[in-house]
Length: 55
Image (cartoon, rainbow, N blue to C red; front, side, top):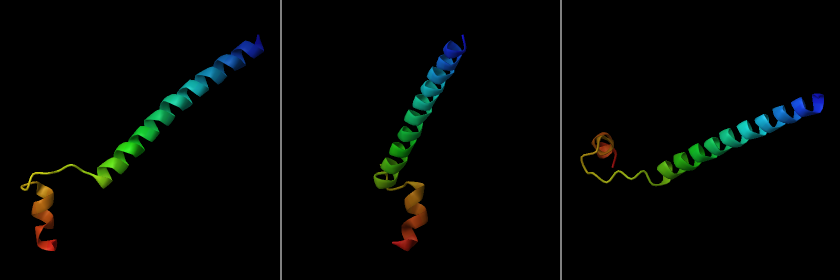
């Protein structure tokens, strides 16, 4: 009886670890991609209005 309860908890913990691990890795991948290549191409983007004097 105790072994089945332990096994159920172990499988649940492994499932949660996998789901949150995949989510964490996905967030890091998206953050790094947005840092390297943000994708704003419009010349009237607010970023360019703020940084125009610096360049």
